Each structure stands twice: as C-alpha cells, then as structure tokens.
Image (cartoon, rainbow, N blue to C red; front, side, top):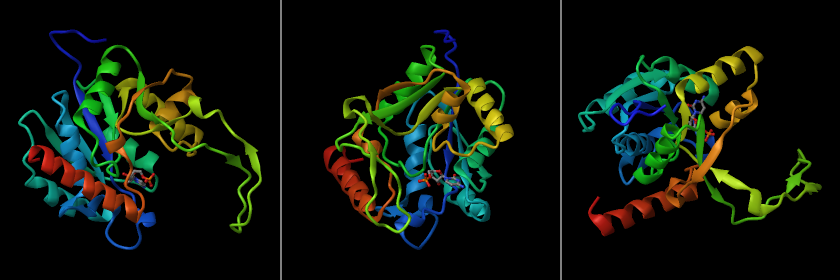
Length: 249
Ligand code: C5P
C-alpha cells in the first residue's frame, strides 16, 4: 500500500464523548485536567506529535461540542495538522463511527485513540502507523500482563465468584490505543456492526476481528495507560512531572 514518494495520509479519531463515571462526579472525563491542561488537549497533542498525522477528529460530548471547539481553537498545533470537532453518540462505537464520517477523501490510514490515554508517546503512535503502512489492516499496541487473569462467573451481589478458567498469562496482552487501521477495513467493520446491531466490542480491533480480518499486536508503552480511576490521575500527573524534569516538556 505504501509508496515511498507519497506515504498514505493518516487521520486520528479521538472518541472523547464518554462521561467517565468511574472517575467520580464532575466534568466529562476528557475535560478533566492534568497539571491544569484538559486530558483531551494532551491526547490531541500526542496524535499531532506524529509527522504522519495530518488530521485529528475529536468526537465531543454532544452537549459540549461548542465548548470543545473553543478549547481547541487556540491550541498551537504543527502546520501539517488540521483539527475537526464533531458531536458524539451514546456508545464509544457510535462516537467512532461519527468521527469516521468526518474524514475526507484522500486519507488511507485511520488511528482511533482514546482521549483517556493522554500520555501515549509519539514513538508508539509512529510504530502503529508504520505497521499499517507495511501492510497490516489492523494494528493494536499492547503490553504483557503483570497480573494473572481469572475468568469468572460474575456474581451480581458482589459475593464470591466461581472461577471458570485461568488463561495462560504469557499469551495474554492488555491492549492500548492508538489502534491503527486501513481506512476501508475500519469503515467496513463499523458498517457491518451497525447493521448487525453488535455493540459488544470494547475496541475497534475487536470489530475487525469479527469481520474475520487479521489484527496484529505491536509493543505498547506503560505511559499509554488509560486514565479510568482517581488514582490514575495521580499517576498521570507524576508522569508529566517526570517528563518536565527530564526534558523541560
Ligand atoms: O468508557 P471508556 O473508558 O471505555 O471510554 C473509552 C473512550 O471512549 C473515552 O475516550 C470516551 O470518552 C470515549 N467514549 C465516547 N462516546 C461514548 C462513550 C465513550 O466517545 N458514548
């Protein structure tokens, strides 16, 4: 697919329309601040840091679209990078689909990156893009697990849950974002899921798997963790402080 003189153009969709209830009450998760800057702004900068990314599409909470546009209007991004803001839907899947619809012709590679992973390093972004340029139709960055994982029969009341299986840890990976796709493959996966009414996939790569298309994993990064619970905010601010101390960022 790739041609050295004209590398395929890449857009990044950032679904940022979730409420983030696990972080506790307050602003939508993407608008929570890390060291005074909204997570979404960190996430946009992380995508724009890649020289390959020419467009960032932010999918905002429907009732916050104007506010998000205003927030991003003053953001200093590289000249190569355009930004668009569109209203999101009721599920992550719907928000991503709305983001995909905002991507113009001429872009062949699409990244999907959670606003809730504001600190992903540019090298991880570039290695995902590289793998798609090299011919993979779906690429996910991922890390081996530290914890052993049990599959259980969930107990609604919070009581003891019977263990059903213990998957072999060495074969498991915790997946992160940005996930990278051949655009046509991702659009097809979303169209197929919309028709099938399937809403069980928690990531886009899972939808591509259901199509029967191959998905590959490349190494993720510990700083690409998802900010989900209050303690994650503390960790994220510590990472930013370390970066500032190391390189003045
Ligand atoms: O809820 P979860 O942490 O899995 O959300 C992952 C990402 O999907 C977040 O960045 C969130 O803002 C986004 N999302 C969305 N639209 C929704 C629900 C979640 O864009 N309706």
